[in-house]
Image: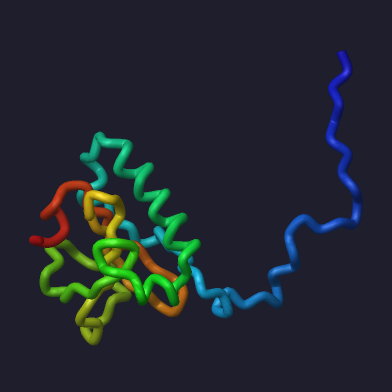
Length: 137
């Protein structure tokens, strides 16, 4: 039996040439997991937490930074937390000049994820799967 192969037009671009595109002009958050610690998540057996976390990231991306800044911290907003409250080691690129990290709620149960915003990039350091694993509430 012969399989039908999809027809692909030559010379067409599916994705725009991004070599001259600046992501800094975007208003929505770009989430970076390079520095994610496995503290708290390594022993989590509740896959629903991670499903809800992914849905939360998608919704935050839809809102954009402008709307996030207007939103309550226990909704889709963001709040600051002093570094001194974090129980675990931070990535080495965080200098002693940085005094606070940024906190979003990862799920509707208010479990947080903690990181640092740098322009439109949010670097995620921790996802708390049990209250108190990363900082005392």
